[in-house]
Length: 397
Image (cartoon, rainbow, N blue to C red):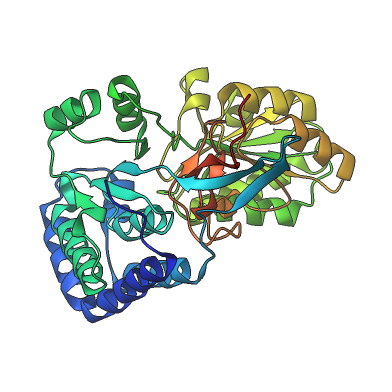
C-alpha cells in the first residue's frame, strides 16, 4: 500500500514532469512518429488522437504545470458536526486508492489523466492501446524519473502492457487492488470494460451531440455554432445532428447557406426525409442513424415541430453528452436546458466547450455520461471519494 504523498511532493513531481517533457520534446515527437507509421487502421479520428506534435507536447506541459498549481483535492472538509455527546465529526475528501485508466490512441492521456489521478493521491495503472505503445512507454519513463527525483516510489504510475485477453483476465480477477476504472475510448472498449470489470467504472460515454435551431434563433450565431461544433471531428463534444424548427423564418435560405458552409469545410451533409427532398441531399438510411456518433466529416440536418419535440428527440437519440439550443427567447432556452437529459446543456454557445479546461476544472480525466459519481468533465476535485473522521474521548452508544 502506498502511503499518501505530501502535497508538496505531488506538486514537485508534476513540475519536474513538465520540465522533463520539455527536455524530451524532440524524443517524444520522434518516438511518436514510429507509432504513426505503424498505424495501419483507417480510423481518421483515431489517427488524429494518436499524433504527438509540438502543440500536443505543449498541452502536456501545460497540463502538468496547471495541476501543480491547483489546490489539494484530498482532505477537503465537506461537512462537520458536533454530536450531543461531545464527539467531533468531520467528512473529508479522500483518494480512491488505485485508479485504472484504459484508453486508446492518445499519448496526451498518459500525462493528463495520470497527472489528475496522481495529484488526487491515487496510484495509477495505465492501460494504453497498442497503437501508441512507443509514445506511452517514453512518457511513463519520464514519470518514473520525476518520481525518483523526489524519492517517491515509481509504482505510483504503472504501465500495463496487456493484450486483450490479459486485460480481460485482469478486469475479472485483478492481481492488485483496483478501486476505480475509467475507460476512455469508443463504445466497444466501454462495453468490454463494463462487461468484465469487478469494481466501479466511470463511463466516458459517446458524444452524438445535437444543436436545436429554434424559430427564435439568431441565424448567424446558429451557423457559427454548428460549424464550430464540427471543427474537430475526433472530439466527443463535436456536433453530429442539427434540428431546425419547421417555423423558422427564412428557413430555406438558412438551410442552403448552412449546407454550403458545411460543404466548404469538407463535411458531408445528410438530411431527414424533408430536408433531403427540399435540398437535394442524401437521405439518412433509417432512424437508427440518429443514434450514431460519427467521429467523421459527416452531419445530419432534420426538421422538428417545436422545442418540446426537439427535447424529446434529443432525449431519445443523443449520447447524454452535450446539447445546444440557439434562441433569442430566454424562457424557451430555460425549458430546453432544464429538460434535455445531457451532461452539459448550452444556450447560444458551442458544444465544443464540454471540456475540463474550458469549464474551469483545469483539465479532465474523462467526460462522464453517467450520473454517478460525477457527470460531465471529471476534474481533479471529482477524482476523490470521502471518509468520515470522528474524534471522541471515550464515547459509547
